Image 1 (cartoon, helix red, strand yellow):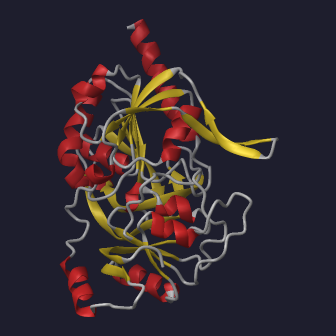
Image 2 (image 1 turned 90 degrees about the horizontal axis):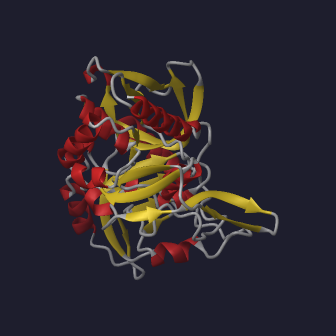
Image 3 (image 1 turned 45 degrees about the vertical axis):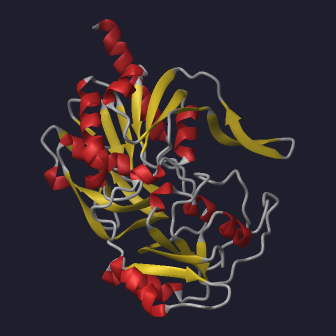
Length: 369
């Protein structure tokens, strides 16, 4: 189904039961073929409100059942038509449970997904493409999905209106100016920042510290994104360290979390199967509270490599891996999961308020200094 052609990538699985359109348009899936464990995909159709970026970066999708016909008042089209329009290759009819168990037990393999309407497949060539694909380790993909130039983001959170209409709220101004470094940012993260009272300027992944400081930010957000954090960190880490030296409050999510970890002096490594779903329990070590979280990452920060100037704040209750860190001497924190959800639970929306509180405290301390 979907587009004709072939595409190699890393084969992963996502356990979310909702939000397939948000998942397929998450830039963090660059270089990956997504297996959906939920069997019925397509039942709410597609619409242009539920995209996280206009140009999907995923390589393809694997489904158990043929695409379900739309059954939602919000549907503006059929998922299969949309896949072809955005150049995504799809395949259905696979035993996705067996495939998921294979990935779980043996790790995420390289694969190739192919579609030809006439059934003409050169299997030897396709196998060669899968074997030749270098894998995500050492691969910087942030520059492939980042914005080409800086822009202002003014869209707030999705709201329901009594006139049977739903739309994203428009915000003007904002109490605090936040510069979001786009390593592959999801739209809903930017919406959450606006809804928290921020005026948001989005800049490309390789923007210099000098150019960011020239925008006079009250805080800097480090976005999610794809690829190996160590590769992206070559140009991103020096910028983040320069911002920390200036005392700018920082908040990172997913790849942004890994970037902050590297900037603090920690190391990152690849997970054997990654975390991708909307039901991952994460424990806050300071409060003991457990949030159910949305996740999509294949690398993680190694907590034992953190310096004494940083601390672990959150851990995964699935495998004990790191899910959050905070600097002890700088206004900077990050989480590995996705508090903006889309899809997923809203348990962690409070982290955007925590960022705003940090910005306000930093402003107050500067006024009294």
